[in-house]
Structures are given as C-alpha cells and as structure tokens.
Length: 214
Ligand SMILES: Nc1nc2c(c(=O)[nH]1)N[C@@H](CN(C=O)c1ccc(C(=O)N[C@@H](CCC(=O)O)C(=O)O)cc1)CN2
Ligand SMILES: NCC(=O)N[C@@H]1O[C@H](COP(=O)([O-])[O-])[C@@H](O)[C@H]1O
Image (cartoon, rainbow, N blue to C red; front, side):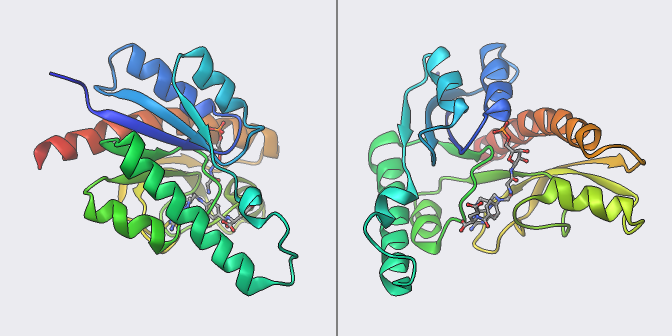
C-alpha cells in the first residue's frame, strides 16, 4: 500500500524540512514527501529538497505585488487573495497531498486558502517556536528570549498545531517545553531549534496517525 503523501511549505533555510526528509527516508515517518513549495526563490530549503530528489515549486507573493505600489492597499489585498487562491489550486489540483506541513512558512494563509483545503479534507499543520498562547506570529524565539530575560516567563518551547485562520491558535498536536535560563539569544535559539526538529517529526507522525484513524 502506498505511503501517505506529504507536501511541505517552507520560506527559508529548511532545517525542519531536512528533519522531515531524513525521518521519512529512515521510515520513522510513515509517509513520503512528494513536493516542497517555497514562498521564496532564495530559500536554501529548495536546495535541500532538490538534493533529496523532491520536486519543488516557488510561489512568491512579490510576483503578485509586482507593479502595485504599497499605497494601493485594495489592489494589493486583491493580489494577495489571488496568491492564496492560486496556491490552493496548485495544491488541490496538481499536487494532491494527503497532508500539508508548514515548516517555516512565513506567510499568513487566508480563508481563500484554508476553506478549500478543509472541504478537500487535507489537514495542515504548522511548527511554531513558542508554547500555546505565547508569542503568536513572527520572531517568537527572540520575543520569548527577551521575556525570559525580563523574568516574565520561566519556560519556552515549541509546538506543532493544526492551522486555522486565527494565527497560531489551532489545536496543538505536539508541545515541547524547556526551562528558561540566563543564556545568550544564540544558545536559546539553538535549544529551541533542536526541539523543533524533534517536534516536527512527532507532529507529522501524529497527523498521519489521525488521518488513518478517520
Ligand atoms: N492562517 C494561518 N496562517 C498561518 C499560520 C496559522 O496558524 N494560521 N501559521 C503561520 C506560521 N507563523 C507562525 O508560526 C507565522 C508566519 C508569518 C506570520 C506573519 O505575520 N507573516 C507576515 C509577513 C511577515 C514577513 O514577511 O516577515 C504576513 O503574512 O503578512 C505570522 C505567523 C503560517 N501561516
Ligand atoms: N511563525 C513561524 C516561524 O517562526 N517558524 C520558524 O521558522 C524557522 C524555520 O527554520 P527552518 O527553515 O530552518 O526550518 C523555525 O525556527 C520555525 O520555528
């Protein structure tokens, strides 16, 4: 029987993508990465995918914004809606994955994207480098480090959660905690990234398990 198919969305380095590639190849993740889509043509993760023989697509928002000045907000919003609609049509129409994993995908996904996926019963999960209810959005690692330095938190970590319209508020699948300690941002970041590489593998295994349970 064919392994469930995984689409991975990235925007950058792809170290979490690499963890997925390595653990699919070892069989720890009972799935096959069939495609990688990047929101940036400069993402090193594209190189990682190519090295692993995984087809890639680049889908850049700036291409949709081209020629629309920043002050033309209505036109830019329309362009962004088209970005989301085209992306979901590529996924549902061409790639047809069983599950989608956001592994450092740095764009908010709109209802134009999420609703068709829900109708197609394709679950989508995301890696967020903070605990549930903490530091939603971008730069979460630095924000959590500063909060720790200020004595506002004594724990940090990362989570894998289902993606819903409300950013980083979806039901968690995996939560990994670490104690805060006075250390450099670089050391904190390294500890979080190490945790991420475990969490993204466990979260992908879990979403595949839940898929099979349906
Ligand atoms: N609808 C959802 N979309 C996304 C989710 C989600 O839970 N719901 N998770 C994110 C991943 N993410 C944090 O884990 C995240 C990434 C990016 C942003 C954001 O504000 N992006 C800006 C652009 C920022 C930039 O270019 O530096 C934007 O999209 O305008 C917030 C959260 C993936 N998407
Ligand atoms: N809000 C989303 C977010 O901040 N995601 C973060 O992007 C990085 C991707 O690293 P990678 O490209 O090396 O996998 C990871 O640190 C991940 O937590």
